[in-house]
Amino acid sequence: MLLAAMLTVLAAPVALAQQPPQPDPPVAGDSISDIIFSGGIVGFLIVALLLLLSMGGLALAVEHVITIRRSVLMPEELVTQLRELLSQGQVGQAVQRCDATPCALASMMKAALVEAESGWAAVEKGLEEETAEQAGRLFRKIEYLSVLGNIAPMVGLLGTVIGMIMAFREVADTQGAARAGELASGIYQALVTTVGGLLIAIPSLAAYAVFRNRVDGLVAECMATAKGLLVPVKRALLNRKA
View (cartoon, rainbow, N blue to C red):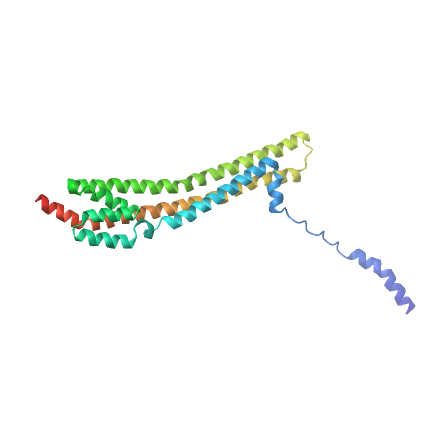
């Protein structure tokens, strides 16, 4: 028993020596706040500007979803009322109804109906001119998304360039004694703003493309609806001319 105990005591250090070394505990990565403030006051201002651009893009997208839709640009109730009034030849009351319901279709119909006394050619011209005006107004409205999508990457690139300048300035100040890890850390922190700019630009440009197609479709639909509503007016004007 005594011999066994002595052998156990002697074998313990050998067993400990043969055990593989335990790995160091993982080092926690930088938090979002660490990354934001790592670039100093300039980096913080760049990130703050990117956040403002992202909130502006989100607000524009929500506003466009609410306002650029069929029920807003050409309410079904207005279409029904104008169809009834124009089928009865009540052009004046149809104009009043357009004034009471401000929307894209109402503006197009009013521009056409006020030219009824000048003949069908004038009615068509008024409709086409107002349609172009309404389309231009809607396209100018969504253009801000495109502007935002083009500005955001430039702002992010500005932050990256500033960060790179600061990183290499650190190398120059230490006369090349900066370690590769420190240089890599400065570069990756500088690239954060570029990523932020792209994360804002990609959804903004995608939303702009979606709303541009929606505007094209809705304006064409408004034009077709207006021409359909003006059929009784066209018939009356051509009969009067004959």
